[in-house]
Length: 424
Image 1: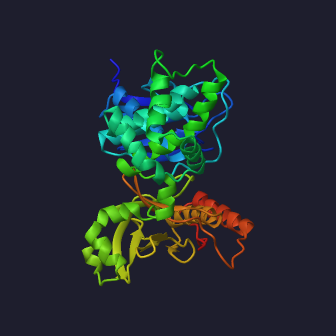
Image 2: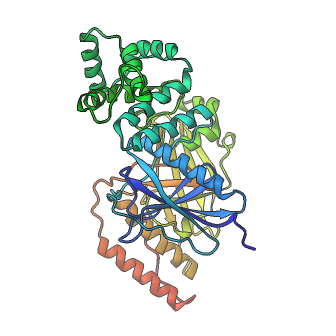
Image 3: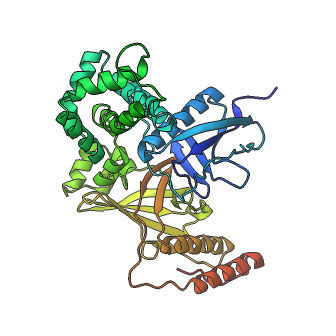
C-alpha cells in the first residue's frame, strides 16, 4: 500500500502575484518549496517533496499560508487552481486561459507569523485581494478589522482613531471627501460599507447591479484596504515588504537571530567581541540566487575566524581544503559581503577534484559578475544574502572564462594525470 505521506505534492497557482521564470527553492515553515515556472502547457506551481513527517492536508495548509504571505508582501492576487499527489515523480498541473504570471520575480519575502490572529489576517487578506467581486473585496478587508475588534462599536472607534495614520494617498483623498460631506469616517465605513454589503435587508444596501452603489464602494475601497494593512502590520506585527526594504535588515537577518539581541547590540556598537564568542553552524552552503546549487559550494565547513569593529568574518572551507571562501557580516551597516574575486581561493594541486572545484568556482564567478546575489544557507534556511554584485573597474572577459571552464572539463575527462591549473 502506498504511503500517502511520502511523495510529491504539487499545487497549481494563478493570479498576477508574479512568479520566477526558472525554478527557485524557498524555505517556508520547515519545508523546501520548489517554485516551478509556467510552461506552454503547465501552470505555475509549487512542488514539495514529502518525507513522511506531514500529511497532505498539513502540506496543503502550509502552501496556502505561503500564498497568503506572498499576496501580503506583493499586494497581488494568487489562488490555487488544482493540486496533485504522486509517490513517484511530481505530476504536472495544467492551466486554463489565465493571464501569465511570470515576471522574472525572485521570491524574497514571505512572512510566517506564529500568532494565529496574524495567520488568519493574512489568509483573509489573500481572500480579499484575490476575489473578483468588488463588494466582497471590501467586506474581506473589513473582516480583518474584526480580527482585533469583535463589536461594531469598537471597530467604529478604532477607525476614527486610525484613519489619520494611514499613508496611502488615495485613501487620504477619499477620507477628505468623506469629511467634507460631513460624515464620520468610522460610522460611514461601518454602516454604508460593511453593513450595506453584508446585509440585504435595511438601508443603505449595496446592490451589485446599481452603478452608483458599486462606484461609491470603489471610491471607499482604498480606505478600508489601507486600514486592513495597518491592522496586519501595526496591530499584528507582520511587516510589509516596503518596511522590510526600508529597514534593510534582510541581508543578515538569519545571523542576527542566531547571535541574539545582546550580541548584535555589542557588534552594532563596535564593542570588542572575540571570535570564539560567536557560534555558527558547523556546515553552511553558498549559492547564487536563482542559480543551481554548485556541489563545491555545498556543505562547507564554517567557522568565525575574525571579528573587528562590528564586522564578523566567517571562513568556509571545502572538505578537501581546495576551496576557501570568506563571508563578511557588517552589523553596523546591516550588510553581507562576498567578493567572488577577492574572497574566494581555489587551491589547485593538479587533482581532478581540484579541477571540478575550479569549474564550479568559475561558474560561481560568472554568475556573480552578472549582478549575482550571494546567499548563505543552513538546512533549508537562508541566513543571509548580499546585494546584487556591481564590480567596479572591471570588464569581465566572458570568452576567457568560458575557455577556462572547457579546459578544466577536458582535464576532468583525462583523469588524474591532468595538470591544467584552475583559474581564480
